[in-house]
Amino acid sequence: MKIKLYIFFLLISTFVFAQQKRVTTSVDSTKVKIGAQINLTFKTTVDTLSKVAFPEGKLFGSLEVLESYPTDTIKENDTYQLIKKYGLTQFDSGRYTIPSLQVIINSKPYVTDSVLVEILPVVVDTLKQHMYDIKDISTVPNDYSNWWIFVLILIGIAGIANLIIYWRKRNKKPVEEEIIYASPIEKATAHLKSLEKRAWLNEVK
Image 1 (cartoon, rainbow, N blue to C red):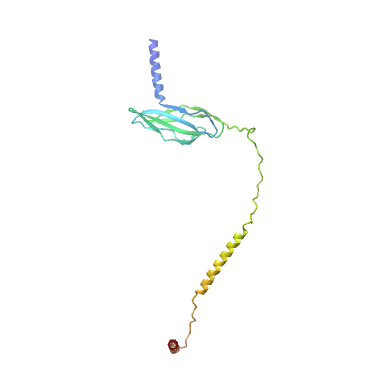
Image 2 (cartoon, rainbow, N blue to C red):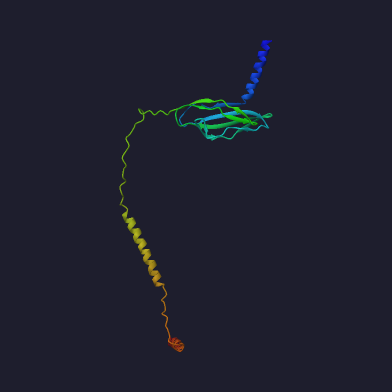
């Protein structure tokens, strides 16, 4: 009788544990170099009507979230397998823990597993790689071999400017001086003399 009760409670606890572990956690590597990306993956299987919210943020513990990838959905009969991936990194060497996070399924939180990862330093072999002293700032000598090009350009610009000035002066219309007459009769007499002069010139021609 005691054995049956033990098996019964074991099955119940296994069932409850399976219900609590609806979200599985995995990483593609637990040891990477500084700045390398660690891919963290959460997987869960739900029915078609379930609403799932995966964790978001810029940091998961001490690791920086480089990218939160779109959730992949795989249909399996009447259920969906949801796969959520994150790209994480760290720029200091050492051991870090990706903490337990919460995945909300139908308003109920499910805790993910924590994962220990190691960030390895980048070792520089100074024996194989030659080290050189920092060079002084070098000055670039001025090259005056093409000075004549600049002289020709200046002469050309001056020539074009002189042509423009000459053309404007040549085509400028002379301004007729306005004659001020003492009276309207004097003005009319002057105009008549001008007309007679023009008529005489036409006859001469």
